[in-house]
Length: 347
Image (tube, rainbow, N blue to C red):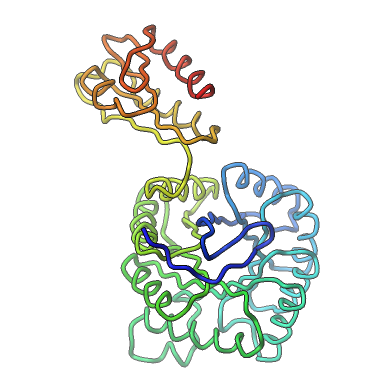
């Protein structure tokens, strides 16, 4: 795929835009003022493969605690600012790597200038994020689509910050509808060369949310659109990271393990789902490009999975380990699974 070459700059220790890889983002469910819990979750996200973590800033204590959060984690930290521009200034002074705010809720132009001036002084990028709940009132009254309202609102705010001298800008325009989100990002991508943070807002819970996000984000990435992404899910944010990695991996954009497992049928004589989940969990601890198969019978493996680097198949309640389609070990199912894990480590 041909990715659009956007403006390139750094967010903390990460590069965004240009030919940089697409970065995975998520957000802590804890406030920085709940320091220990926030640090613990940030580290969990970092270990899961998250590149950038956003935190909500509701109070002065939250903003000041950024300094301690930064000491404990390696990933860049983004401050999510709403309504109170002074909290953004305090967060910047305490070492935050990026500021994110919505148009229309920062306040007067003077307050906006004070925040942007501080960003420029500390060389801090800003993400201008628009969604259907943050459209400016006069634009919201127009009899046009939500997509056009979001784009107009974003255009207005970009002009304001450009006049103030801000150059390191990331854009987002999230909606909860898949097709609207795709349309909005395509329009913004045509208008600007700033890096884009893509996502489907308020996508929901469970499989439905992941499916909707995968369609929206996968379509945009295939179009060459997107420099960072978040899969917004209700619940544990680590699941967001795994879902994002899955999207990037399926598009060939992430060097990480790939699991192939067949659907169960009447030929399956073991609890295939149990073994597939066990290997899937194990592969989350592996940082190498490898394709592993977990197959239910002789029909599907090793034959159909012969292109996998290695895998197991279960035949008459026996576990068979194979590499590139060639059987190299036979034993009980549990023995085959343990042998597979060792082979993955030594790959």
